[in-house]
Image (tube, rainbow, N blue to C red; front, side, top):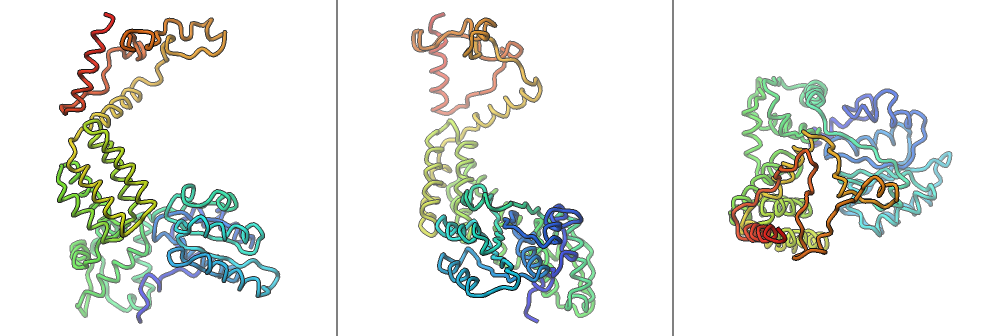
Length: 423
């Protein structure tokens, strides 16, 4: 049988559906909608492998509604129109609205999403979209306003173990094998809350074991089997986070070769270029910061560029930015300053704003001395005058500590020059 384990174990009914009880459990919103046979358009938002496609299929099967499906990765406006034409040319019993399921709807362009809008508004179809990205950013507002958004969560450890045991005991192939699970830590960790990934790993380990008697699953065996697979780079799993960690640490460590290598690993693995660009933005602020403020500007330009261009050309822009950040002087003083200030806020609470710093738009506020005694910097020599800007309780606190690099030392000299004015 060539059908993968994950497909063989795909639930056919709500009672077989594991996890997401907040949506499909007893008295939950989606279950009530299904039981009432009154389905409205909605979008399922959650990480891969949590049952978005399966849930849409179960709804269609439970209600016996015609079900059309498209993948936004390889479908366009033409495909959407062909489905609408097919729906219009068929008279469905009781005027039932067919379900149009669009996987990865966030990958549809604005014009493609616009092509859905009229059919949803007119009630030609019930739209069910699935996305791994925040629909607030990726789905056009008119379409989003006509859809409820339901959030699906990564499967918890107990859900994954339940699924694994269900596969071992009920799958048409695995139930006929003598399989003993000694360890679960590795398979749970590498699954990363993804049901499909767990079943794929389980199938890989079982199929790679030549023992005709008992197949024993251990953490060591899971790790060995995954390491033997060159396709181990997984955009959504633990290795994904290991590689992005190595990438950022190479930049922080001023190693352009290491940074470029890990960038290449992500590019070759099909990583979303916007994800890489976002991490470069964070690194520019957190690790380079005031030592080279232009790094943030370049990283921001890089993000804008990759959203316009995409692969394969944007790999060059990512590489240029990566090398620039890796070879820039480093400082985390800005990062540490906000951490220090947040710690103070958590410890001292909401200290009152000094009266002289308060705004006074009304006469009552002026009568209460709001703004009284405030010195307007531009009225003074060098556009500076010494006055207190912190609450009285923490007057002497210092949150920003300059580091020893050329740019921050210039800032230090500038501050010193201000302190010499109007004393």
